[in-house]
Structures are given as structure tokens and as C-alpha cells.
Image (tube, rainbow, N blue to C red; front, side, top):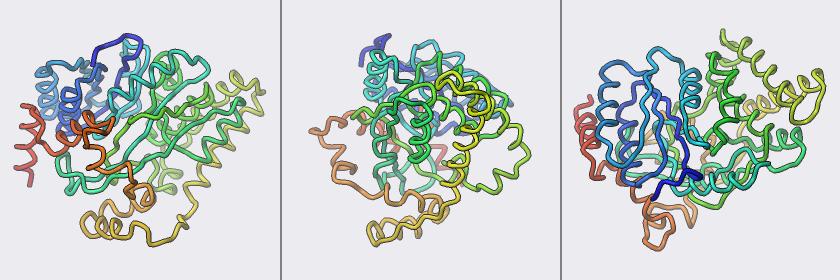
Amino acid sequence: MERNAQSTVGLVMPTLNRADFVIRQLAFCEAARSPHTVYIGDSSGDAQSERIRQAVDALHDTRCVYVRCEGYPQNKTTLKLISAVEEKYCAIIPDDDFLFPSGLSRCAAFLEGAPEYSTAQGRAILFTLDCPGPLGDVAALGDYWGRPTAEADDPTRRLRDFIANYWVPLFSVHRTRDFLEDWTPFGPVADRAFGEIAPSLLTIARGKSRFIDCMYLARQAHAGQYAVSDVIRWLTSADWHSAYRAFEDAMRDALMRSAGLTDELARKVARELLYLYLAQRFRPDTRRGSRGSSLREWLKERHPAFYGVLRGVRDRLLPADSLSVSKLSQPSSPYHSEFCSLVDCVRGTARSRELASVRRHVAHDP
């Protein structure tokens, strides 16, 4: 895939002591011939950092910027990386997930001609492997976030619609200049959850978000995937109050600018949005039915640590007609090439000297 300045995206990837996943990510970028630049913010210890540096140095076709962030918390690392991005567009990518190069380019191309939109994103899949860690066979695969969009003209209505169908636009393609502005208040904030929720809401306040019908994101399911897995622990944490003040102030500024609200009304809307978010987190999952019971039983038996977390997204893990390893791997699939590169990398079968080091490391892991 050729590099085009108008459609290339800076991929922001913070990491901490997960060299195997970073190496797998870089192997995918190489195998998929990605034209996009990877910005690695490495807070790892010396041994892990050395392995990541060696993988970066061994790259042939992928442009990668390595930033040492020793001792940095995740939000500070993310802000430093966004400020380093040279491309007009950027997206955050967790080190164990994948963004498809062609989908990134299509979303960036859309934003180039749509100034009223702040983000764009495509289809996303959620997958599990048949064993913990970075390498294994894909055991389950399905839809991750449906067709996420936020297109109401009024910013407050758009934000309420977004909260009612919450998804994570941090993984969407953003204009780098705007994303940096949205992230700046939260670089010093230690609270990880507000590091997801606040920039997401600020992004939606800034402009509309469009779903593009393309393969865009693949997320590997795991127990630490969600920013708020224990609401009570989060609300009673030592960092919560200061993080909330930063959230309310930033939302106040955004709503006064985008919706023309007064200070008092903007703060009221900010509080309402957080209440709506919390109401969703506290709401018990009342969905019932036998659909997908075999998959749930398999996960419960083989991966009990994942089961409690995956329970909340179990319906989305169900295989759909167009979302299966066999169908996505068929030459007739428009996603054939990039998806096969992904499968080869998670299986450890891609031709990559760096992946060979991951295979050796996994084999010797007790």
C-alpha cells in the first residue's frame, strides 16, 4: 500500500512490559504493508524495552517512532505520543489490538472532505485466542461495536445519543491537532477511566462521527480490556475527585464553545452525561436466551478469567454470517489480505524474525 500524505494516520500505542504484543503488532504492520506510522510510547523495564527497540530496528517497510516514557502513567504517555505525531490524522491503538491499514486510510480520506466531522471509524471485530498470551489460534470471533455513529447537529443531543450507545472513539481516526487539544487536560490525570471517558466525550462535543463500511479494528478480548471494570472501586479511588474536576472543567469549556451554553448550564450537562454513563455501568445485564450458549460454555470452561468480563459482550461475540475466520480468509473477501496477515501474526506463522523471538519467549514462559 502506497504512502499518501492525505490519508496516512499516526498510530499512538502506549505500552508497559508487553514486548511480545508490541512485536506482534509490528509484525502485522509489516505483513500488511501498512503505510501508517506507529508511535510507540514505551514505559517498560529495561529488558522489555531492549526487545522492543530491537524489533523497531529490524523493521523494513513500516515507519516507527520510538519514544521512551520510563515511569510515565498511561495518560501522560498517550499525550506525549499524540504531541509527537507528524501526520494530520491519528488514532490510538492498544498494543494487543489491530487497526487495518486500508480502513484507516478510508476513514482519513473521509475526514479530509468532511470538516463538520471529528472522527470516523469502520467495522470492528472482537476475537479470543485458544490460549492466553499473544500467540494462538482464533477461537471465537464476532462483532465488537456494531455501526457506531454520532451525527445529531446539536452537540448536547449528540452527546446524549452517544452515551446511550457508548463506544470508544479513542480508537477512531481523529484530526491530530484537535485530538491533542482534547487530550491535553488529561495528560496529568492519573485516573485511567477518565482518560477514556473524557477525551471520548470531548471528541463527540467537537464534531460528528461517521461509520464507514470497511474493516477497521480487531480487538483481542482479555480481562483488563475495560477502563471501568469495578465502578465502586473507581468512584472511591484516591484520584477520582481531581480527575472529575478536570473532566467537568474540560466539558464546560467544550460545551460553551460548541453549543454556546453558559458556564452553569455547561457544567450541568457535563454532570448529566457522567450520571448517564454511570447508570449504564450500574445497570445489570438482563439479556436472556440460549443463543450462543456453546461459545459461552467453551469460554467459561477454557478461560474462566475472561468469562466474567466477556459476559457483558457475549451477544456481540456470536459468529455472524459475514464474520468468521473462514469467510474473512476467503480470497473473495474484500478483507482477505489484511485479515490473513492478522491471523498469521496471532498464530505466529508470519514470516518474521521478530515473531520468532516471541515464539521462543512464549515457549519458555512457565
